[in-house]
Image 1 (tube, rainbow, N blue to C red):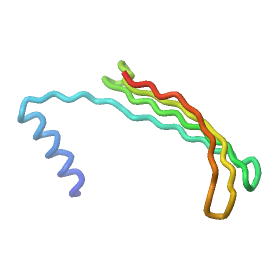
Image 2 (image 1 turned 45 degrees about the vertical axis):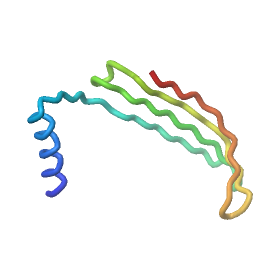
Image 3 (image 1 turned 90 degrees about the horizontal axis):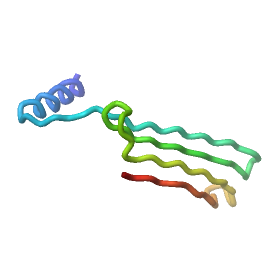
Image 4 (image 1 turned 90 degrees about the vertical axis):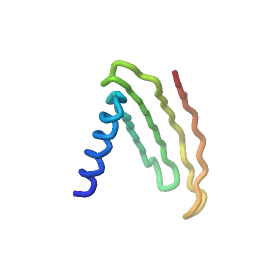
Length: 85
């Protein structure tokens, strides 16, 4: 109940001051494939949009490989592309 009150209060505060706000979204997709007990592959893509998918000021994608050297440690090699406008 308190969460709803805080959300309503936040929107009411913005409208009371005459500020406009626009809806957008932050989308994330993660994938991991365990090839062996000590090897795994991963990939991730992120997309941030404004104005309900009309503008894309930020997106990234990356992927890599993990090698578990010990029970509590992993080595990772990865590459990606990060675009900000």
